[in-house]
Image (tube, rainbow, N blue to C red; front, side):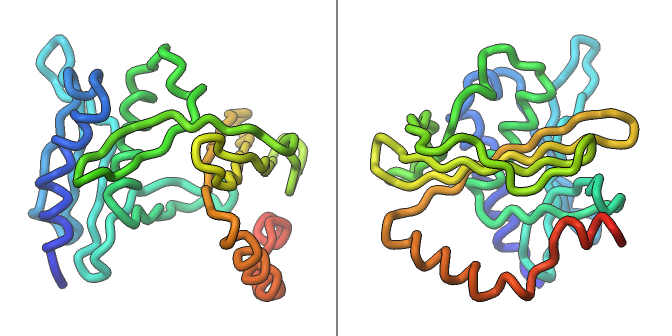
Length: 212
């Protein structure tokens, strides 16, 4: 069991978030709690009546030395962990939840964004993607779930960009949409395809999960 990774992230996180987001710099705060089995970092804003409004909790598993956030899988109908492998994933998750809680109207969700590390500093930049394909449906059940993919080229560096959109409708007619992007170089493409193709028979599909 080691707390080294937790302490490193905790010491840098607030400063890094403030440096990439002016609004977070003005309103965002975090508190550290190491008194529980799984230490956590809680993020909040202060209201006009001097109360804390929490918008994100980051947990740390000291045995596996990994950060995670807790979520609820609407398909499996059970809580689940989302592992955040590095500080960039953590920053992106906190930043996104912050703007969600603020009901931000500055077209935050209309941007394709990525983080870069340059000489130890983190910068936020917009990705200009030229989409080569339309949004293609990979899986769909009416009024339950839709998963789509779209392929494009990053005009700045020529990377391939794979965009995944997951849309879920709950039994209470609530709608959730989650979007993620994966960038890769030309030489990686064939390797990725081969690795997936050779292991498809071992994977579980949506139909199997839904029908359980």
